[in-house]
Image (tube, rainbow, N blue to C red; front, side, top):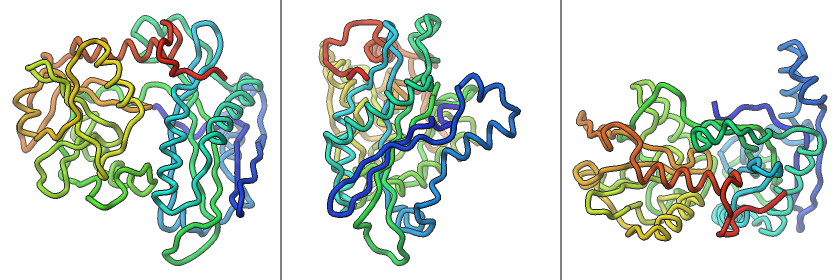
Length: 359
């Protein structure tokens, strides 16, 4: 699985009380080799101890009402042996907007980037980071590991539906691998609604992901790797996947991704793919696309996200009808986009965009 609770020892924590007060906490640990050699129960107990803070409130606006925002970004092992984070400034800006959107005191973007770099550096100094493997190149890094960086907010104690005025910002790290579960293929259109107009769909809010978890579980129970949402009002237009943006490469040669609004999360991988595709001379449109157009006119389909990368959707099922794309295989454009972005991220080709920030 992509995610686990095997958190690295060093955690960043900042508290707002009129100003942000920062600090790094080193939780109990041994070396990675020593931890791997421990009996399973003892090892799990040690790792679990790193996921708790005794001085933070159990009851608060985050735990009771889902009033929290988070980010997800990666530090990737480089071919030259170093580590680099993919576009952390973009995550910093989105984190700032998300906090502001929930009326939290926003976390400064420069502090965000600095903290992400430093928490990764401190953990790497203790040996907690994956190492670059030449084997990853064989499948264009589809099975490669990375450091997943999870910044999130946590509210002060409180009961009652209120806003958080003095939140914490925490950043934890763990090793991640491939995102989608093996053995599952294709996507289905969910009957659930992810976001409504004038809601929080454009914010990376914790509460948004309850519906996503439910819908993705339901899709997996039916053998699908992903689920796709339609708009809340007309139930006609495609919006995004369970936790990723979506692209349709049409028979006309147009690459379409749903236009951003207050119901769609502005993905950083999405933005990067649009730029890469336009560099290749592809006509990219950010516009509304109906499910009927998507089913009848698409030759390739893929989803994008920090965890997903650019992952092919081999088929799409809607109201009992299944349409297969690219002969049920990954399409040429999808492969080209995936391979290019992964090669940049892992340092196999030059980063002409300036997207990678060295740790």
